Image (cartoon, rainbow, N blue to C red; front, side, top):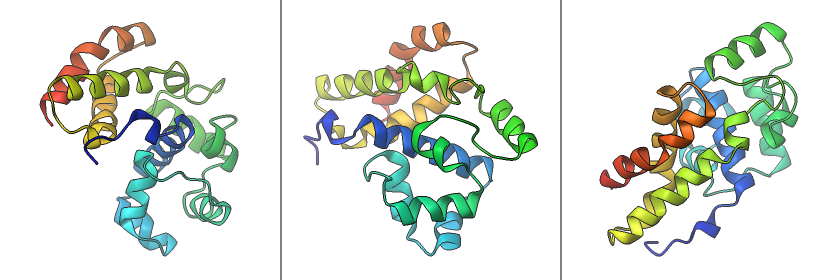
Length: 169
């Protein structure tokens, strides 16, 4: 898998997976806890979260929504409220810097994909395998978003964050 191309992960799969991960973290579930609650395998949850395995099976989406209480429209498309309960939605929005207009403005700005592309390029230029690119990006994005206050700051920090993430491969 060392010659994995960026096209192996669709934007939709990455976005849905990242939203699933946000919900799982908000509910304070491990991948194993969520998998157990759904009668699913932990590795499959991880594959969906990373975008390696698209999250598109209708029965699976319904199970996720039933288990976590997340709104299917938000999970699939990033629109509407993440949770139907306004208090839960407000707490979730505050914890993960999600606004009511797009529910995931930072991702919609393409920062996650810009970071992914930067990490992949650095891995390739260093002759390192790119198969860990999505995992490194997910971890790096979490670090980047926790340490930045706005979109401009996120964009400005992409090169240094990508460099740090690629050095960990």
